Amino acid sequence: MGLEAAVDPEPELANPDAMVLFDVTTPRKTKADARASRTARELPTPATLEPGTTPPAPAAPSREAVAHSPEDAGALSTSESIDMATVDNPWVNLDDETEPVEPEDDQAVRPQVEPTASSEPYTDAADGYIAHENGVDGYPESGWGDIDSDDVLLELLVEEVAELLVEEIVDDAVDRTSGITAPAMPAHTDEWERRVLADPHLLADIAFAIGGPFHLMYPGRVANNIREFREAFARAGVDGVVYYGKKANKAACVARACAENGAGIDVSSVGELTAALAAGVRGGELMVTGPAKSDDLLWLAVRHGALIAVDSLDELDRLGAIASAALPARVLLRVLPAGSASRFGMTDDELDRAQSLITASGPQDLEPVRLEGFSFHLSGYDAVARAEQAADLIARCTAARELGHPARTISIGGGFGVDYVPETAWREFTEGVGRSWFHAGKSFGSYYPYHFPAPGAAMLSRILAHGELAERLRDNDIRLAVEPGRALLDRAGSTVFRVQGSKTRHADGQPYQLLTVDGTSLSLSEQWFDSEYLPDPVLWPERESARHPGEPTPTSVGAASCLESDMLSWRRVPLPRRAEQGDLLVYPNTAGYQMDSNESAFHELPIPPKVVLFDGHGDRLRWTLDAG
Image 1 (cartoon, rainbow, N blue to C red):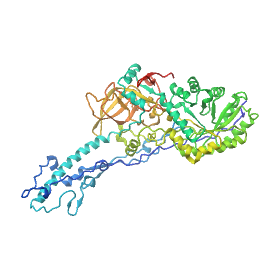
Image 2: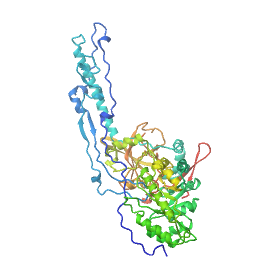
Image 3: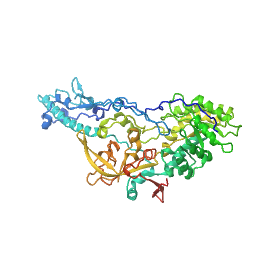
Image 4: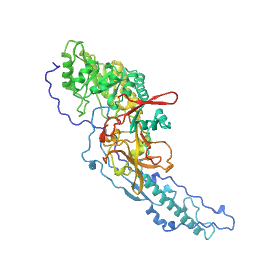
């Protein structure tokens, strides 16, 4: 028998809440904004001329300069201004089960906006040409004491205009070239990554042995990230526990790093649970999450003493039939946050009913189900919202204790941001992003926030500091649990593809390189969310091409399948040289969700294996295949 023979059906819930990471609203910078301010050239003055001499005659203007008078100059100098429409596409962190909401009509959400041209006055302060009452700024006033001085001044002005027109034409060409190339988005790197790229043989040897794309994993970085979370708890004086969200990456080496560094694991399937146990994580260090868990998963969780986040009254009833007083189920009740339309969690009425059912299931301390606390998950990456929701659950814990339940744990879930790229690179991208930077004029409505000012453990510290949450947790003897996924994998892995072919294509009259690599975008999973993975790939070896030495090249990266949409980088990445067949492209910091979320042996192509790197003697790195 379960805790309740029949349970009223839960009300049908709408789609989960979504969070807009940013809207593309800022107009593109104009050429006048980007161009450096020119200063007026020094011209000879009467004081610098020998007595009785006349100023030197200027050089004859070029044919191109004569073809344009100063009146024509404004027509040659234009500025582009693209106003991007506000886009409200959601992006939701993957450390909870909330799904993103896809727009029904792409064009309705992201209308294509054509650039508009506006005349740029030739007398521009940015150029150093400002008319003054007694002459031209930077030039001598009239009245040199020579009848030809006005003619000389006119000739010098014509020469200056001619030179500036040539500069303007060159500037226009540069602007057009840079206009098709996205700004650089170099990823933050870890020491192990720099060692890999600097080694003249390691990547080539692994690529030769694997014979296709592969993922690099460095579990030492996972260990460091776990320590940072634990240190944040210690600094705040809070009893805290870290459960790694295993869905973010299924590598066995990550689970082993958790077992060795005091972290538990959050699992949602029989496969994840057994893999965690095989890696050395003990049953009491597991948290089992997810909706409507299978009876097999619940049975294993109870047998191993795992903490189970119960999502519904129905699940609680089934769990009561599996557990017993001799082997009780340890549970958290998952809360549906106020105002949320998520399909996960329980309402206030359901929570009260669940507590009553647990109380009535047996004598105190002999219940088949033990209520150890409450949990919640929030979309997005708002530290304040998490702190305030946790504070609300403190009151629930104290009320449950008054009813005899040992409720002393609150789990605030995942959603701890990762800082992939520098702030300046992220700002430049978000302020100027448009279709002109992407192959085939591709556009995306939203992106993961690739710059995050307080990532990982720093975000946990902000949560604990808000509203004196740490003090309240200590005063009420409550343990705080977190379930980070992506944040524990920050800079712990990279993905490597080999260049198989190359084409030259043109956009706005300018050439760019279109590569094909030996894997698919299913191994770089941002496409799953109709988005783009933005950190720049690194072209290896890091050398100048013999045929194209030192020639920066805008490059888009296609994959090996026959699908038009199978692109790793629609964005034209500014690679430092032209890529050649056999070169490697190393996409950095891909361990968090990119490797496993969407993998598939499509076309019967092999799924990239995970290569685990370990520190050897000296600066040497050793490698083996992951056991998972």
